[in-house]
Length: 299
Image (cartoon, rainbow, N blue to C red; front, side, top):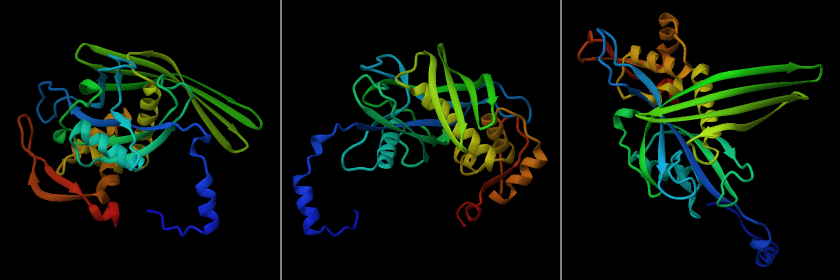
């Protein structure tokens, strides 16, 4: 509650203020929920089963975009913040009470939703897949993890004396069993007067609802950027206890590149605490288990 003492003059103003004088949009929260998943392939000695980055998608059971796939999300209630909306929807869709959750972009392009003027706050969400249980919401009759890949298909750069323009085209590929979803999204960055303006355009979209292709591209870009900066965000994809090998593997999956193990471990040393426990499992030589160093994260 905002602590504000209303003056008599302000009370008089508010008494005559007409809230219907301006059109008001509906507000929604859409979550791009990521997890590192195992493919179930037979592991080789000393190696984990093949792993991949997964994104949670729901198959819509009603109009609009019936039978299309969408990110989990929903409309904000009058008595809650947009962050509370995201947490409520995440619990309804996943049964999780908590997860890494961070806003990364507002989506307000006119016509983005055929139902009317609807603005969406995008949230990046990370979960430990071992704790995850898919549960479809009221407007979905199917929910599940899709393997996601994003490649840069084309990039052009025009640098002039006082401005620059960089155009990049991203191809999204998502698959689950026999379902294949693809999209082509163009990112246009204009630099002028030391300021940057970025816009997006969906060029192709096969199977995704609304403007969720753009939301997914921007969410994955945000995840990769945060991972490259410090790597701390990757811990929210891990269980409470983990090996350094699995931490590096998750980081490489997100970045899409191999990392030098000595450099990675040196970088992560301040953020982990070694435990007395060892990993176990078929095809594995026991390895030391670590946990997050809370002092390094929140000290």
